[in-house]
Image 1 (cartoon, one colour):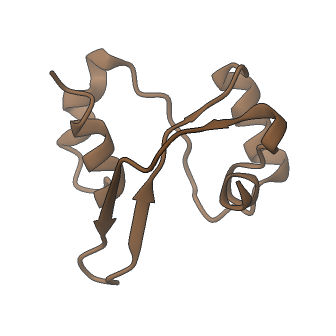
Image 2 (cartoon, helix red, strand yellow):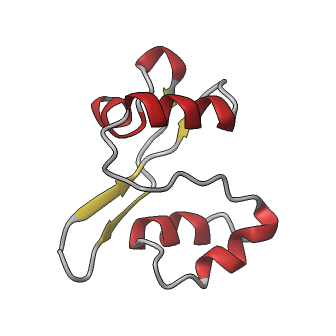
Length: 92
């Protein structure tokens, strides 16, 4: 919850947190990321507004990836390992 508030600006009352799904290590930094599903009743636009106003700006992009665009995103060289693994897990 603390990371969601710090990195996205989202408060606990706007989130339902699921069980961890995966762990990924960044090849160069060896930093470990844990993929945890979060659900919110907020629209993507509302999440984006909160993120821009209240998050720590660690990340320069927040994206909503529709199922039709997942394959294109998986081919991006700048995609972080955790994002790649989470997106790949959505594929049938």
